[in-house]
Length: 566
Image (tube, rainbow, N blue to C red; front, side, top):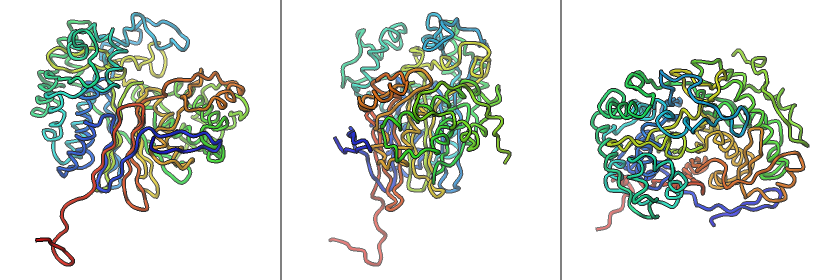
């Protein structure tokens, strides 16, 4: 146990991991080998983008259940030279032959609302959306990196070709998905050797995937979107009832978007715009809570948890009503993040009782003026990358395309399978995400950058970590590891670190409290110490996260005061 922190109620929690501190760069991701790949790029003179994209490619090898080149995500990049943000939306889209009623639904009510007949939107070829990951990563490297694709992909190739040891975390997830992985021979061959999950520490070698990565290194993303590897995927799709075609791949485009921005106390929150709902609702909830003294209420108290839960329920009511692909539906982002709208809706929160909330009317307040991965990188030039990527569920659709080593996403599972809603399926439409790669500014300079996996639990978890630092004075390590809560209007999920007495108090306020093993996944991030200029890195207990930093530097130039020992 590295540190103990107490809230105002006197309830302690201990951090499981220790953070890292460095002066010249920091990489924090959910696998030590992936973080090492990013650090290797910094050591070679690369910048934060080089390190981030190298880390992402490495994660596709060593954290294959969470991220892949046939996946999707968002990149939030702060350019330290220009002071500008670049937001890349490389999320997945529905194939052109998809239809609103392509899946038979199981229920019109929660918790089974998103379920479909035979789990067709979850496992197998029909669950696969058109991917944006590879195109987005290569675009970021080409436009903003320094070392080039062929260099930054080398660690991933090594890990795939020579193998990596299976962690307990990976083995456990293989175990929980074993029956689905077993349905697809190319997946079972790698992850179920002899028909069972590998033992902890066993070497996992991905020879086919190493060949795919080498092809990408030499020919770039066109090998998937316009070339031979894409043809292999499309042929496998056609043979197994999938919808993704060569035309879908050839016409896919990333989107460059303006981030959503708003103040919270003396800080500025900068995060992802739709088609991710995450940034908008982080800001919406923080706006709602800004009217309460969250510091005085104390971390993890009945009052504190109740207020967060009520604010989350308001945001989820609005999310269901208004959020979708802005190319297909009108999303009132400016209204949802406005202080005026928060002031009105804050009045609906009863401090002494849990409420039920309906969508509001944000248009009246417009101002005119579950399985994913995250990585965060900062370099000594002031560049910061906060980047969340996914293949959606653990191991995505569970399909590995034979001969390629590519694991296909199941992002069609993110769409509302019921026709007629903001996030319902339409051909070429981006599905709604909750990803929240976020950068917090203080005095117009990056202060914190962080994110987490966890589907609809992502943005509630990220905003709680931000509050942990700003309102409760936690270190970054404490902030990412602190017990979390989540609700979208049904049960109030709390991690075991929320004390039994607090749970009883929440039940008394009308909450249906359910204790869960974890809310969302392995959060990681970086934080600048304004006094020293040092960079702090942190990763939490919920995944294999590891921050690694670089200090030191080149030899001191010869000249005055130089000392030499002969």
